[in-house]
Length: 246
Image (cartoon, rainbow, N blue to C red; front, side, top):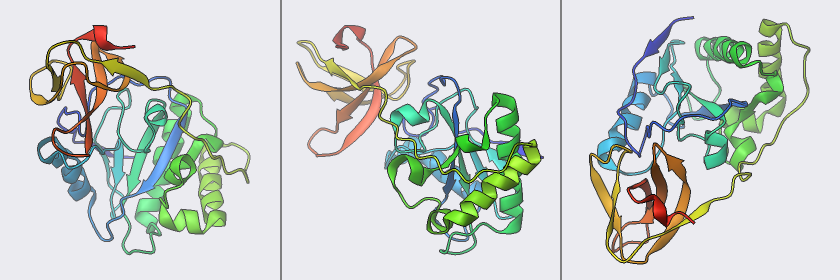
C-alpha cells in the first residue's frame, strides 16, 4: 500500500494542529464531487486556509486510481465528521467516486479496504469501529453506502477478512455529543482571535465581555467559535487569554 504524504497548511480552517485523543473510530466519507481527483480535493481543503469559506479536512483521500493521499497526520485532529468530539477520536477517510450514485470503483474500494485494515491493526480496532459519516450526524455520506446498507456491511466484512476477524452484520451509530462545550467570556478589552496557537495571524476578535463557545485549551490557547463581525456566521480560531474559559 503506497501512501503519498501531502500535508495541509496549518490553519484553523483545515489543519489546526490539535493533538488527537485515543483513536476509537474510522469514519468513511464520499467527497461529494463526482469525477474529482484525490489531489483536487486535497487542494480544496488546503485552499480553505486562505478562502475561510468553511472548516473541513480529512486525514486521507483515496482517488479514482486507488491512490492514497495523507493530508493530516493521524495524531492530529481533522475536521471531517461534523462532530467536534468524534473528530477528536477518529480518523477520517474521504473517497472519490466516478458518478453521483456514489459507488466507489474497484481501485478506490480496494485501497479503502487495505487502508482501513491497516488502521484497525495499528489501533487494535474491530471492524465495528468503522462507521460512516451518516452514523455520526445523519448526513447522506457516503451516499451509496447509506442507501445500500447491505453493501456497507459487505465492505466491513471485506475488511474483516483482511484482518482475520469474524464477519459482522452490525451497523454502529455513534453520536458525537459526549464532550460538553465550555464557555469563553471575554474581559473588558477587545480580544483578538488567531488562526493558530502560535498567534501568527489575526482572523477576528471578541468585543469586551462577549461570550462564545470554547472547545478546550490546546498549546495553552483556548479554541473558540466566534461570530464574524457584522454577520450571522461563526468561525473557529484561538484566543490568547486562558482566563476567559469557564
